[in-house]
Image (tube, rainbow, N blue to C red; front, side, top):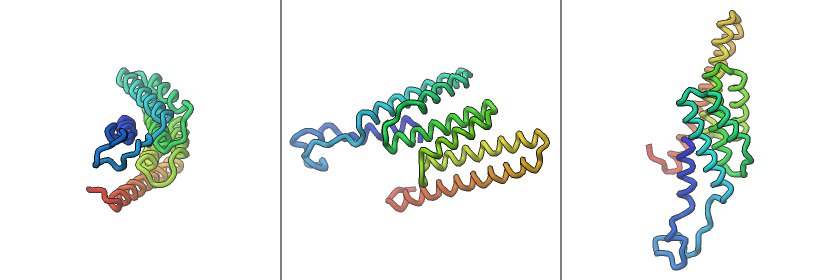
Length: 187
């Protein structure tokens, strides 16, 4: 799920204006004014995150990977309100940073960003599964670098770790799907 979708969901969760008014129509959950589901600081963070991701998109399309990384570094360094949505956005930003670092052959930087992202999200979620997938790709890049350096045994171990991480990613995403379907989601 991309950041813009999270922001749209967050904005949509604030409720329809007609349902917040006094004398709300019968179809509204209650005639009481609704409290926003997400506070102003969270909305501001999500908006800034969306802008910084867009800035990174523009820089990346222009071939400025360092600039794209700088935009995302600014995002992950921002003061962050405590909210699940914020943690998910940070996890997603770290995954994207790791992917950009892989494009620049910065395996160690990608490793650090995946680890930071995994700290942001616990339990089975799309974001955790995606980070594990990216971590598997990081290990694959490490294996290739080790193989190129003639370190076959270490390369084989890294390849095994890569495959295990990719399998973990699939397992997490299967849990997410099963949970969604059990909660009434549709295929």
